[in-house]
Length: 293
Image 1 (cartoon, rainbow, N blue to C red):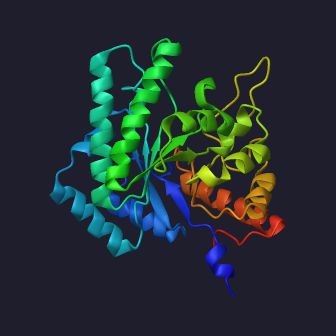
Image 2: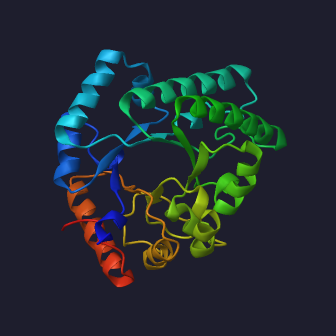
């Protein structure tokens, strides 16, 4: 009776589609491929950071387009803070980090975006130490207050670098922030790639997980740095069967997002391969299939 309610809503990462696509093309293709929503990217490039300065006319035109194609922008991948991190030693950079956060929350509020994924870096292009960590915590506390005020969820990504590469580390950070609007956005590929027990990690943080990135990776070893992107789901080492079994056992039905990149003309074929493989995992684990393919 309730089976359909337990199906995960599944989104597509914007960068899985060709960058030259218009918003109409992106939304139409996302719908045609059977996804429920699109995750917009606001990365460190000038092009995508400029989205934070869209005027209301542009914002609401895009929202109407989403309504027309029945594909909401449910989440935002906000990785612009890699260039403007909260932990930076440069006060001007930290001020820009706050401005980016304020603008991102305002944009999310107007577009109807529920979750903003934050990059789990204290710093990226400069040396890290205890001071950068403390600045990052201070920035996250302020960001959480901004999010509380707007009613927009912040979810910090479990990353591809050592600083925040596990949900265990998130739980320590979460105690410092102490806000219901500061949650976790695990990337199962990153957690697996750093050789953490993905099952134990997901069970540990289940109450704090807002959304999940599905991505394949190769693991870090003593003589290999791993591969954390540009793999088609099913071609790496991530144990998706164990992941979906855990989601079922913990009754976790948060939205999932396929994180892939449109590197060549095979982008659509690669997405469809990923969909078929994930559906196969669903059948193996007794999870409601994600796609009608």
